[in-house]
Length: 447
Image 1: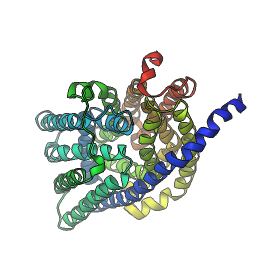
Image 2: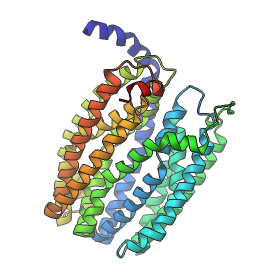
Image 3: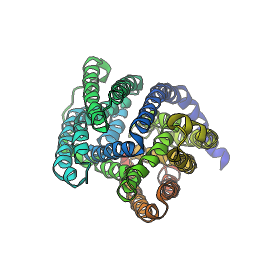
Image 4: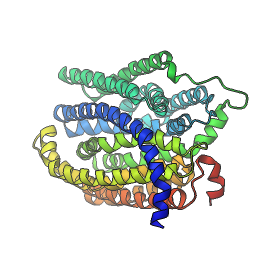
């Protein structure tokens, strides 16, 4: 059995090393350079807010940004991931996708702006003005995310990474100036929307001038209308909406039940946890288009399995090492960023719990990408919805009892559960079953 598997994957891995891993490595490096800069700038901004406005001001700022992130994810309709997968494939069937995706994305973002202003803001208990201000960034952020997905699909991620890094740098500089002049979180949120709009202009210029990103003319029968695009992207939409609740609801629950100061302490740890995972995150961003390419209808059988197995080994070993290494530096880094205070000491204990989740977090993300590439997005959706419901119940039970510590423990348990669910699905859908590529085998394996 082992010899037969080696005979199957040996020549295939040899071919993949020459092309796939070169592309993944190049794009990982581009994303990593940009994300190191962006995360460092973002952490600097959070530290400035914590020092200038205190934990309460930081909590209000993060709560408003979380509401914006939830609205952005819900209004995305799964288009970002769908565009990456479809435009990564070489089957010639996505020629008319881009115009329909842009129209859908902007229309839904505009709807989200109206919902936040008419429904959410009046119910936000003192944060209504913050919600209205941050809602103005939804339209430019929606376009920026879709433009990034289009560039990512062509595996020229240095272009989108450079623009996104420029947006982040401009925001941090303007935010630091506003804090220096004595402005509060309202001005910071307004500045965020203005800088996002400038980023949209940069993306529009790049897309119009970069000839390689122009799609070929649609042949009869290949144009994707908005109804077709919406129907195909709905599993990604449900998964994305559940995922943003999964990753952000704990901060909102802390804010509602424990107050802005407690939410601010949790946000100090959570933002640093996200930043410490930038290396595996960059690798996964670069890997998704390659997985989609190898899982497409025209790909050779077995390519997706071979690429996934090697990626799992790299990701698993790297995430374990990262979890151990970051545990050693968690305390000193937090003290440098936020200073020595009771808030910082509480955030350090939260961060140490979150860091235990690194191997499970990045392996479940890899598993989700592999299932997307194989056309099994419905299975990811079911798993994501179930685990999100479990996490919300866990937060609602643990936060009133243990505050930030309860939220951190619920997050760790949920990461383990989600990893287990998706690993089982990958074993059934990608590793065990014959890989015939893409969506063509979805109907046969849907059960």
